[in-house]
Image (tube, rainbow, N blue to C red; front, side, top):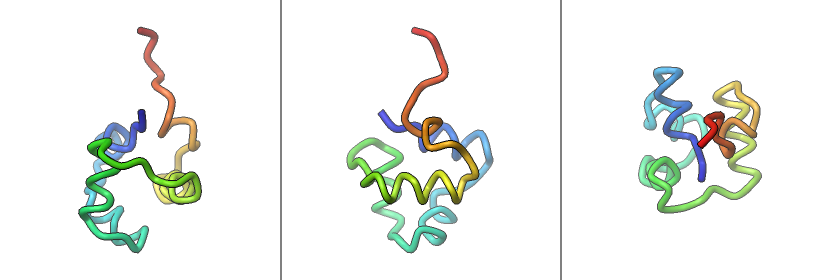
Length: 65
């Protein structure tokens, strides 16, 4: 499961801003955020750089279930 939505919320960043920075459509980014589509590893790495987080934060939950 990706955690892009949670990181965006924590940082107060809109999906439209991320889409612009990635050079992707809002619909594509929204698909990533809603887990309808998984970004390629290269794209996930780019998202992590843009959001200034470790890529692990986007794919691993910090909570203990």
